[in-house]
Structures are given as structure tokens and as C-alpha cells.
Length: 422
Ligand code: ASP
Ligand code: MG
Image (cartoon, rainbow, N blue to C red; front, side, top):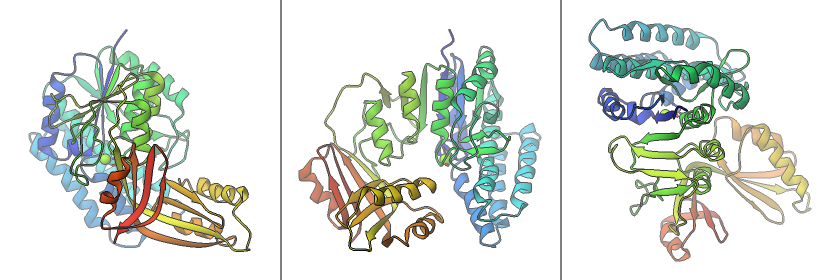
């Protein structure tokens, strides 16, 4: 039996030429088992590509931004490869294809589909450059298009995996190949039944790593990050963050659900079902232990703090002097579901339902339009949602100092507050 390892490298780990060079060092001593290497778009490329589409939609000039994206990748190649290397030609071909998609007319209705066709190029550029550079440095691997094995439905931007089809393609196309050579591929992207490119949701490359690991019966997944592992809080926001040596799947999943950005929320479940351990390690300190997420982690009492920014608080008040009933909640949830929105926090009172959700382009407008005839709706934007798991009640006032709290909720296991700087 082959013990395939899956390694995932995110945007920060391939953000420039020195970063790409660092991958060679990390991988050189870690490729004695069959490996699948998953890479995301370089640095902030996905945001930059998104920005082109927003500009285009607004009728603004997106060409300077597109020029910058091309130059960014071209310059990385110039720093990594000798003149005349084949990577330049291949990159140019990808630029051509992306330019053609970018030139197509775009409307609000076609936005999601258009988005996936274009945004996926971030991963294509990156995987092309990284695979050539690793090969150039003597590592044995082949570039593969993830869309050949990652099958999804046609929910553009949030495509759902067709697990059976994906597994069968992985087993028939990639498993045999892995007996002879390692694979380098793209995170985040898949293909729908019509052969169109789909994406799995922002930061979805972690999820790709988990999908491939389960579909290839891999032995372990390692996600390489710019942090030492999974911390109990974002060190940029809370100074006393500590690293977990290990975590249970359930706890890790819960942290990601509430917004911990260290791992994509969909990553844990497939790995937990298959019992595949997930390591989160630092590409800056590859020898350090990182965090192991697995089934047999020891219980702990360390509070975990998760902050989700860019939140909107919406309250729906019944207008006809009745009280909130199940039908109202059902009505609101049906709208949320049809807009693919999720309530990150929900509170029901006698006459109103309040919910907190991520701010998303067009979505608030649509939600309000769908419900305004039955409810009086108010909303506040630019908020943050703080969730504390295993909270220590005495520490909460200190954490809320300097903030205005708009909504608060606590149970024995968690505390949540929607707040803004006051
Ligand atoms: N490049 C994509 C993004 O930035 C996917 C990923 O990084 O995981 O969202
Ligand atoms: Mg990224």
C-alpha cells in the first residue's frame, strides 16, 4: 500500500521568488513517499483578480490592474528562471487565455460563472511557476490540472463536490500515477458537469487538500502556513496567543466554523470521517512541531478566541403586533438559504429576530428585498463578531473594553458578541 502525503501551500508561502525557493528546501527532505502538492494563487493574486472583475462590472478601467498581475508573475519568473526557460512561454499562454475571458461582457447575472472562469487563473499561474521551479531544482513531480479529478456541481463560486465522481477519478487517474511520480496541482478549483471551471469558496485550497487526501486514501495532510500552528487566538489581535500541540477534529472544526481563518471550515470533516491526521506547520520553521489535528487529542481548558470581521447585524421585526413564530424564522432561513448566506449568530426575542452574517456583495440588498414586505428591517454594517470557546467569564469585560456591544449571547461553552469600536 502506498502512503500518499498531501502538502498544501497557501498564497503567503508562494508570495514571491524567495518564498518559492523556500519550498524547495521544505520539500527536498519530505518527498520520499508519494506526494501531492497543492498550491494556491501567489500572495494576494485572488484579491487582485477579484478587483478586476469589480472594476469591469462598474465600467471602470481594469487594464492597469491586469497588467500589474501579469508583471507580478512575470517578475517572479525572471527572478527564478534563466532567460528562455519554457515557463515563460507557458505563462504567456495562460495570460492569453485569461485575457480572452476578461474581455467577455459581464453582468450581475453572469458574475459568479464569469468569476470562476477568471479567478481560477491565480492557481493556474502559481502551480505552473512552482512546478517548473521545483523540477528545475531536481525534484521529481508532474503538473496536473485539478479539474481533471475535482468534480463539482455548477454552483459557481461555492461549488459542491461530487464526492463519488471525484474519488473515482482520483483512484483511476492519479493513484496509478503516484506510484511513479509526485503530483503538483491547484487548490480551490474544480470542474462542473459541463466542463466549466468552478471554485470552492475563498481560501478553498485547504479543502482541496482534504478532498484529494480522502479520495486518494492518503496517510496525512500538512498545511504549511505563516503561523507556527493552530493558535488559541490571532496573535495580531490578542497578545497572549498560545499554540495547540494537538487538537481534536471536533474542536478544530468548531473553531473554523466560528471564523478562525487558519484552516478553511470545510477541511476538517472529510479528514475526520476518513481518520486522516492534519498537520498545520510553519513554512518559516519547517522543523518545528506545529499542530496535529487528529482523533485522539487530549482534552484541554484553554479558551479559544475567534474574531470575524466585516459582519452585518440585521434585525427583523414583525410589523403586525404579533409575536415571532416558527414560520417567521422559517421564512428568514429560507431566504438565507436561497442566497447561500449563513447566520453566524442568531437571537430571537418576542417581536424580532436578529442575525449576524458576513457582508457580501449584493447579498444584503437581496435579503432585504425578499423580506421587507413582512418585516421591519434594520441593519448595522462594519461590525465584528467575537466568539470565545471555553470562555473564562472574568476575562470578558477586559476583552470588550473600548467596544460597543450590539448583541451578546453566552452558553456554558461559548460566548459571542457583536461589537464595534466605541
Ligand atoms: N487563492 C484562493 C483564495 O485566495 C484559494 C486559497 O488561497 O485557498 O481564496
Ligand atoms: Mg489564497
